[in-house]
Image (cartoon, rainbow over all chains, first blue to last red; front, side, top):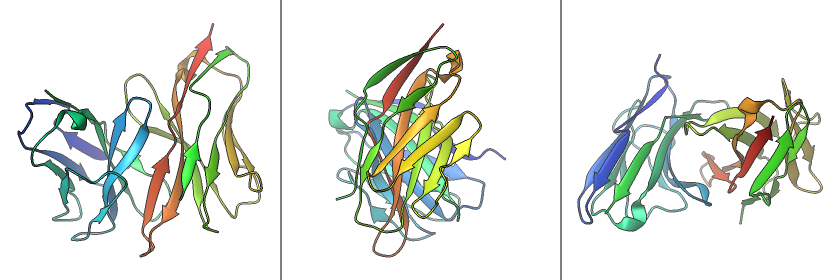
Amino acid sequence: NAGVTQTPKFQVLKTGQSMTLQCAQDMNHNSMYWYRQDPGMGLRLIYYSASEGTTDKGEVPNGYNVSRLNKREFSLRLESAAPSQTSVYFCASRVSGNEQFFGPGTRLTVL
Amino acid sequence: AQKITQTQPGMFVQEKEAVTLDCTYDTSDQSYGLFWYKQPSSGEMIFLIYQGSYDEQNATEGRYSLNFQKARKSANLVISASQLGDSAMYFCAMREADSSGTYKYIFGTGTRLKVLA
């Protein structure tokens, strides 16, 4: 039981490049979330998904797209990366309880 | 709009002493939940404690307790008998439901706690 996994752990991109951050959970959770964490800003919600095939915008969705193709996986895509997207990205999941389970994070730098 | 405020960017506490980390929230919902998470320097997010808006008793989990004052809209974390391993960033968070009833969460900006030997 790996919990929530994220790949990659680290990534460096050049401005304008695209990439997809992968997140998977093996806990049979319905809800999944993507956050970004910037110094002094706490965690801010980018997108979330209540179930397979549904997604909703969070607080800071601009510049991102997501895909929830199945119950296990929730991916975050940057189509044209910008330096302002340099951040640590966390994926989380939740079942019926209140607690969220977080992945280890992806540290992204956009040059 | 829903909001979480943590006004203490940094705190120091002597080992074995108790410390209170402040959190205030703003919501118009009647049903909500409040959480505290710990983020050590290694970066992972660790769930500490949860308080529901209808819970009459303050939540406790080992050395952690949540001082819930509903009328004041505060949900302070109390750590008793601080240990060196408690040095970390602490985030207060609130669960709210969107228009379809799906839970989403908002986080405060965090308090960095340093425990002194």
